[in-house]
Amino acid sequence: MKPHLVAERQRVIVFLKVPTPGAVKTRLIPALGPTGAASLYRAMVGDLLQRLTRLRGVELELRFAPPGARASIRRWLGGRHRLAPQRGADLGARMVAAFRDAFRDGCSRCVIVGSDVPGLGAPHVARALARLERSDVVLGPSRDGGYYLVGLGAPRPRLFMRMPWSTAMVLYETLSRAAQQDLRVGMLRTLADVDEPADLARLIRRVSRDPDAVRHSPRLAAWCASAGARRIRAPQAPARGRAGAPRRPARSTSSRRAASSR
Image 1 (cartoon, rainbow, N blue to C red):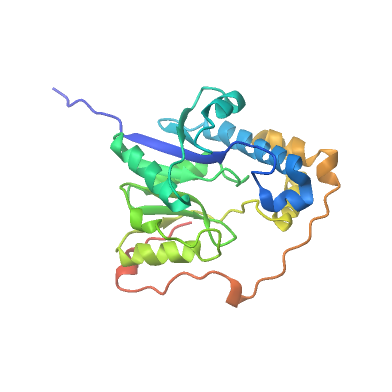
Image 2 (cartoon, rainbow, N blue to C red):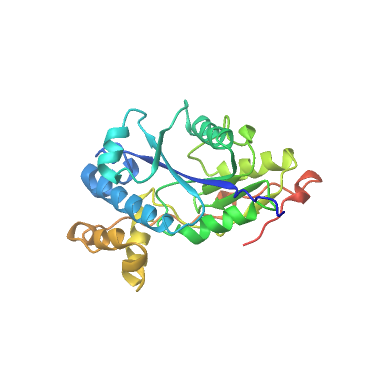
């Protein structure tokens, strides 16, 4: 008699906020205004969820903020996806809670992604879940020194607590902590998030030149083609020298287990 095989539970968690003008994409408000920044955020989230619904064999969960906004999220995004509030004093505590809940629910692998990376799609997440077969941690680096994706096969709270969030040291510090814990690290390709006016200018140029943008990100393509977006003249970010670029920690005996593949 053949043994009954039980499929592994895998969860993908999207961290997002209610798109209230003045409360999302605040660093873009000088270029877009509160309403414009909120409309951009709505477009990015809508496109991301459309892309992630192509994943098969995973649970998709939306972790929303503020915690009492469940009704607002349902009105915005409908009732198709699993919903849970973000809980914790800072981003690290909220991520620890999300991972803890997933593993307590019986998930064997879990990935958390941000909602403001237009280049992120189902293939990136599927690749992260697959790499958790041979890695303890999977990271998707962002160009600003942080990361847009983190995946785990077991709780690792020390990776997230007392982290200098919103700085260029987040990825560096995360890799250092992984090395200290002798964790195997898998790396995805680097993607750009949209936080600053210079990011916005690059985004508009990229979307305007991408023939697949309407298929991949229809809401974002429509937003970039809008009259408001065409009037934007965001400043370019200053060039960063080698001293300003985040670097990985030197490979120590414990960090030699880190497997980096792109």
